[in-house]
Every structure is written in structure tokens, then in C-alpha cells.
Length: 402
Figure 1: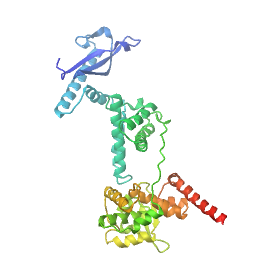
Figure 2 (figure 1 turned 90 degrees about the vertical axis):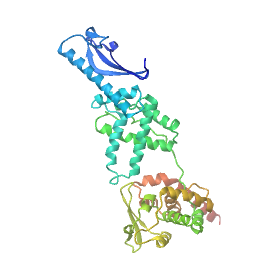
Figure 3 (figure 1 turned 120 degrees about the horizontal axis):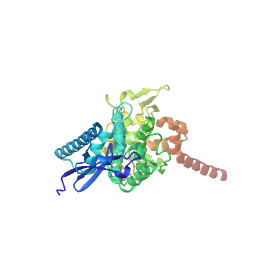
Figure 4 (figure 1 turned 180 degrees about the vertical axis):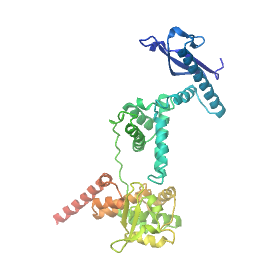
């Protein structure tokens, strides 16, 4: 037998004969010494079946219809087989069977990856309207992981959405941890994004209920990394030989006194600088992440940096986030800061060292950071408030002993 040849057979599944004495016809495909089969959704009386010819022997209209349907199935398989060969794609018998069967069942059956891809198409139309391209890419990344997991776990290209159970998500988490080598924080985000279209499927009536309702992610408490007062002061005072490091240091320090995230800093325009009710200069920007507007009064250090770099067209020099983070590693080594700092560390420093350590109330910090809820601020910076409280109590102890 030529192992690369395609063989198609129609067989009866007699084990599923019903009370009326009829059983389903299955299509069996053999290719490269591997076999796949699926139901044709046709039922016949076994007594009228010719296994050699793989057709019904009776001449009635129903038998002629069934025989015609089997011819259609066979032609579709051959056509798809030829298409895959011409396209030069690497495929196996499961791929061939899936491609054929999904076309027939797509109206009756909804598949996980296919449904996620439909969601991605809709989501992409919202890029630069309601979401950023980076957000869409993160959902796309989650979808690709789901597809890879299904291939790894079930050796299939997709999985029926109606067959989803809680165990599916537990297995997905195991795959992301052991096969994809993601840490808990990253895989939590991937699963969080994967669950979004599943909840939409519930809303659309495709699923009766959320199969993952009882799922609880393993929480990861990340320590907030920020610069201390002394570290920030050392960074500000240092004079760098290389101009690029001097500029990136200034951009970083600017964000330490404004709390702007990278996208907000990089997109800062002249029109974002406004005179506030107090007659002083403020920054007014829209946070794409939350959709809200934030207003930040410019502290003296931030104003000083703007005066250095502002031109007619832009407020600050522009570097890619990747370059900034790369240069910050150099800067930390030169200054002697033994922390892994990124641009986002500036935002954490603004909240911690600049605001909370100077007794600015948590609700004001939340407002200046543009958080959608004060709970987010409390979850991130609650420990910092405790540290500040502890320091105050130590000072009080010293005073009481005097």
C-alpha cells in the first residue's frame, strides 16, 4: 500500500443501532497510515447495505438520496485533499477530516478557537477607537495559546465549545505552566483573556452557563518596585557622559513626578498642557486603558524638564519603550541602583515615594494615577501605606521617650 495514498470508506456503526433497527453511516479516511472517521449524519437499515460497494442496494427515493449524499461526501474529501496538496501544506488525516467536517457542522457546532477568532475580528475593528492595538495583540496571543493547547492535549485543531468543562481550564493552566513555561502572573492574564469570549458565548445563548464559573486563579502578589527618596535623588543629581542616557533619565524622572505611563508620556502634546483653576500649569490626558481623563498638576521638577525639552511641536523627546527600558538598565548600573527598573517603575515611584510617602491621601493618589477604582490603588499600594504608618510610629516612639 502506498502510505501517502488517500483511501475513503463508508462503514456502518452497528453498535449505535437504534430501536427502529437503523444505524449511522460513518466516513473513514485513511492517509499516511493513519485513520480518522466521522459521522455522515445518514442512517440506514443494515439489511439494505452493501459493504463491498459501500452503498444502499434498494432503489427507493430515500436510498437514492443517501447514496447521493455519500457521493457528495467523497467528492468533498477528494477536493480538499487536492487543495491541501496543491497548497503544499503539511497536513495529516485529522486535518483533512476536520476541514471537511467543520464545513458541514459549522452551523450546528461552534468551536472554541473558531469562535475566539470571530471575536478577534470584531475586536480589531475597535482598535484606536475603544482599545489599543497592543490590547488586541494580547487577546490574539491568548487565542494562539488556546489553539496550541488543544493540539497538544487532544491532537485536534479545534474543540467543541459545548464540550467545555472546568477541567479544560485546569489542563490549559497546566499546559501554560509546563509546556509554554509561563509564570503564574502571565498565565493568569492569558486565561483571563481566554475566558472573555466564553462569557460572550453564554450571553449569546451558545452555552447555557459559564463552564469556568467555579475556576479560581492562583493569585500572585507582586511586590511594587519603586525608587526610594535617596535613589531618586541620586538619579536626579547624576551627570551622564552619554546624551541618550541623560535624556532617558530626564524622561524617567519626569514620570516620577507626573505618574504618566509610557504611552501617555510618549504622546504628550502641547495641547495636553493647560492652565488650571489655580493659575498653574497642569497636564490633561485621556487614559486609553480606562477611557477616563486625568488631570495632573505639574510639580517643579516636571516643569523644569519640560522647559529643557519643549519645542513648538512636542513637549518631550520620543524614544521607543524598548529603548527606554534598555537604557534604564545602563542607568541603574551607573548610578548604583540595585533594582530592575523599567519605565513603569517611574509610575510606581510617583505613587509611592512622591505621593504616599508625603502623606497624600489614597483617594487623591488614585485620582492622579487615573485608576478606575480606588480598590485598584489600595491593592497595589496598601503595603506602602503600612510601611509609612510603621515609620511614623517609630518616630512617635522616639518622641515619647524624650
